[in-house]
Image (cartoon, rainbow, N blue to C red; front, side, top):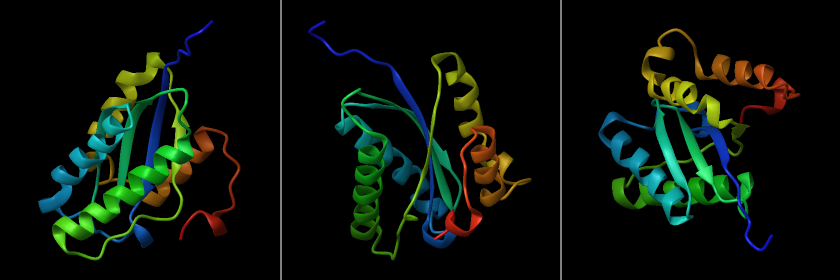
Length: 148
């Protein structure tokens, strides 16, 4: 086969440094659009980007030649720099991130989950949510090393 094909869907989750509420309402829509634009520049597709004041969820479709680490590094570095330049504010993402594979059959459910972040976080903290994702996806973790 001379052509590489793939349908790689990722649910990426990352928070602001120290989970501080840095994603203010006045920059949220622009930041989420910018994150989607970075994915587009990398020849991927951001199906949905949403979050709260302290973290972001992205459902993205990437090319087989790209790695999760590459996507996370470029998205976080470029968006952090953009926030500094455009909004003249101190802003940083956490060092790590969560990334979970999504099957095509679950795109609608994951999209709905990401779209409802504001409602979801009226009942659950980001930390509770993230640990639940790790457990649900059988990811071994040590809570001493999850948070910055």
